Image 1: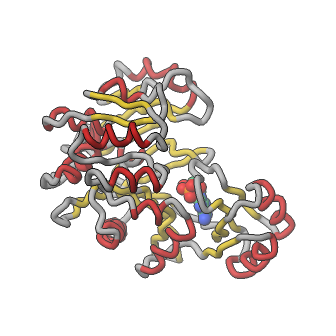
Image 2: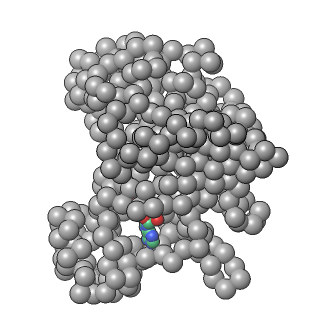
Length: 340
Ligand code: AMP
C-alpha cells in the first residue's frame, strides 16, 4: 500500500522482505527477498535507494542499525527499542504524563503475585515482546488463575495490566514531517473481535473535546520521539460518571490497520502521508470524504466472500493477494462510504 501510494508521486520503490510471497513484490519497481541477517543483500539494497522506511515494527534492531549506517532510515529505528517492548513503551507514555492502564513488570512467578497486589484483578498478563492480535496475552480474572496464565505465556518476561472496562476503543493515526509539523487523521473507532481489529468507523462516537484530546496525545507522542512518518496510537475511552477519559493502550510505529479507511475515505491516505513525510515533502491536510465511513477487515476465509461487495454502491474492495486464507489472518478489507 505504501508502494502504491508512492508511485503516483513519482517515486519508485524497492522492497526488502524475507518472505518470498510478500504481496509488496507484486507492485514494486524492484524487490529483494533475503533474510534480515543477510548483510550482503542489505548492503546492496541500501546502495540502490535514497531513503529507507519500514511498515513492520519487529524489524530486528541490528538490521535497522546496519541500514541506518548506510542510508537514512525513517522513522529513526531507536523508536523500535521503545515500541518493541510493552514495559519500555508504557514507561515512555507515563513519562509524558499520559494515562495508561495501571501496570507492573513480571519476570517471575513471585513477582506476579506482587504485581497482582499492585494492579488488582481482573488483569491482563502480556508478554513484553512480540505480542499482537491478542497473541502473548492471558486474562487473569481471579488470583487462582495467575500461575496458569504465567505458564501459558511460557514464563516469558511480561507486564501485568489492569483490565480496563472501556466504553469504546479509538485510535489516532498521525503523520509528522521532517519539518516537525504534525497532521492527524480523524479519531477512528475500532471494534475488535477475538482480539483482532474487525471494523473501524469514522466519525468515532466521541465528543469534539475528547477527539481533540486524543489528537493532542498522538501529537505529543510523535514529538517526543522526534518521529518522521506515520504512527498510530490506540486508546481506550473510559467512562467515569458523566465524564470520559482516555488511556493509551499501544503505539504502532507505522501505518496502521485502523487507518486503512483513508485510502478511499480521505483526500490523502495514511500511506501517502507516510511517503511524503519520509521524502521530506510537506504533509497534506486530510479531509474525510463522506458522512460516515466503515472499514471491515476480511479475516481468514471471509476473503472468499469479497465478490459480493464489488457491486455495492460506495464500496471499495481490497484483496492483499496473500494466497491461501489462514484462520485469523487479515486477507483484505472493504471500505464503505455513506455520501454526505
Ligand atoms: P493489544 O495487543 O495490547 O493491542 O490488545 C489487543 C486488544 O485486547 C485490545 O485492542 C483490547 O480490545 C484488548 N485489551 C488489551 N489490553 C487490555 C486491557 N488492559 N484491558 C482490557 N482490554 C484490553
